[in-house]
Length: 495
Image (cartoon, rainbow, N blue to C red; front, side, top):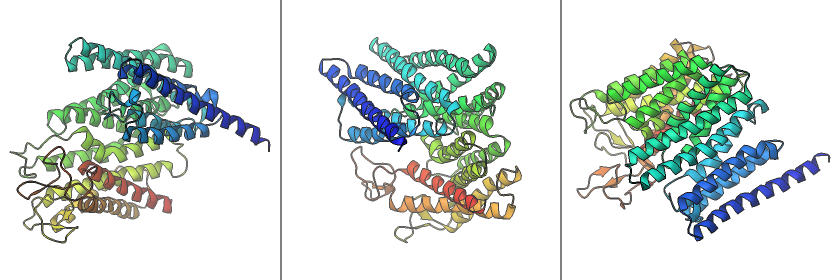
């Protein structure tokens, strides 16, 4: 019974927060009705909501009410966006998912900080302080530069510089208050965190910086604070990521934005992981890129010059593995957390490798593959089609990543035979899931000549089969999620 007054107090505070945040949205709508620019009202609401998140540890004694609020607003904003409600925050950028990404990020950040240890609250509050002030400042500067008839690249550069300046100042304040480091260490850590956050903000499209910027800052500040990552190691990781991204772009393996995202992933592997994480990543990317470069591997390839992979493709193939790395880095390391995260990491990359190898080698098969959907022979490269050569190649692709993990003594069960069977099986399962998704739910279109294609021939074209919202990147992400999930469950069952 003693907990009932507290529960009642929390309920009243949650209700008050809902009313206050609703009033903030209403204020934005009223200001827009009075002629204020929609971009201004959107920044106002963004700043107000982010500052409220900063204040939640003061308003609530535990994270549960914040989870409730964040979950409620994630769902409410998703509905409002789809139905074009609240034009004060949606009209200026109807394509943006920022209003959904912000409360969604709170759910993730809570799980990485407050829900684990109260001494991580500085990272939670600091991340949203940066989001509250640096992001709107960058948007305001970029908008003014554009209205002043500056070119879009110039406006983007000025916006990024503004974001970096504000984020650096706030990072110094956060780290000075949360650590007992000297000035040099604080400045080094703040500079590294700022560089990462600025790059994340620059490459995140359609409002997803509202999710990735806070998560990135937490992933830097928490390991630094707990001694898992040193300031020197952070600098070394950034150098390694820069070299990797530069080489990947120079060799035409990745587009510029893809190289930036790939560089961030590489920096994460070096800084948060280590050799046993880096080597499987290198094996996957290196061998997959080499296969793509082979002349004739794709119909559009000319003399070995294959199209560069984009940031979306990098995330589709590496996003699940990246998430597993992040989880292993911030969750308490006791029990099966680290082995489970590592297994999910390897399983996801094994699935991506299996799919890539199956596709690239399947294109060379002298026998046409058959469709999982119809059971008929189809053209090589058709989504949801399989061949004997492609299946054998998938086994070798998964085995290449798993072999790298085993040879570097990654934190698995210690039973090499079981680890190999589990992880190769997880990779192949992910490839199978990818193939079935490609056959049954991926959008497929017919051209005027009757040929099948994954790209809509016209902007308003409807798919002849599958779902319009499911493209190849979504299918690849699903496959890696299945591979990582099976590897995780399999390890936990025997741990």
